[in-house]
Image (cartoon, rainbow, N blue to C red; front, side):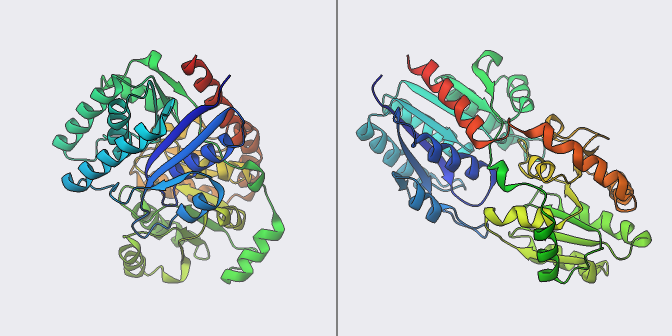
Length: 387
């Protein structure tokens, strides 16, 4: 078989789950003699950090299209579209694989115009959701329906993504396949030495109970629900420490809310950290909380389970496909602060429950969340589509 030329396109390489998934996929694919792989991305604008430097160091063919931006801009969108068409025509790719909503739409149309025969798209999170304006929602649905017509296969990072897309009439179920988002699971193991070191660094007592949230400080990520629940948790457990790991535009607003509730001494805002530092903070914690209102399948959940930490999360999108209620954590109704507070308090006061739930987690995610397993499934899909 001749070498298969593949081009992955993503809107921006900030530090995030979709970006880690994409970079890991391209990095492992290029190790195979069967594939010649290119990664195209827009600039990593914003306070969420960048993976572009890593990509340029580890991926042989990385192209940054400066006009490819997340926000809608008719002029920049037109320029980025034309540049993508030229790059794809020149590259003569066998497969174009897009990620994220903007690159998923512009990239797939560009691939079609460039004469690419096999177009694949990964749904990391649906661009249309119940928290956006109805006009924007309908527009995204219509655009997705259009580009799906000439998409050979849709990869969903969770079964629920397929179910929602099918329900909106965007895609037929037989065009979809679920491949969970991979990661380097060997980095996510329980390590008491790391736990003690991070707590010393942050000034946290070794016997204290630490609740961790890892997410961009951004809309719909749910930090405000955690802060409000914390106010009640503290009444019975005044020595609990909350760690917020991540940067974003809501940083000052969340710190102001913490101060307003008189919780300043119980919250530590770590800020933006590199992805390879996340296992350190998970090991530092006793409980991981994820209160996002919109996700594909949040990577922090399998990462926490891999480190044998119980998780409390809102029951949204793909979370329930890995988090089993009352087994390895608690699934609670979205936006329900009372349920969130009760679940956290239950784990804070019951060390035996924390340990039992933590032990359940690892077997539920290995190997299906390994990078190698993910890329193996993607390779099989490519072979099937290209023949």
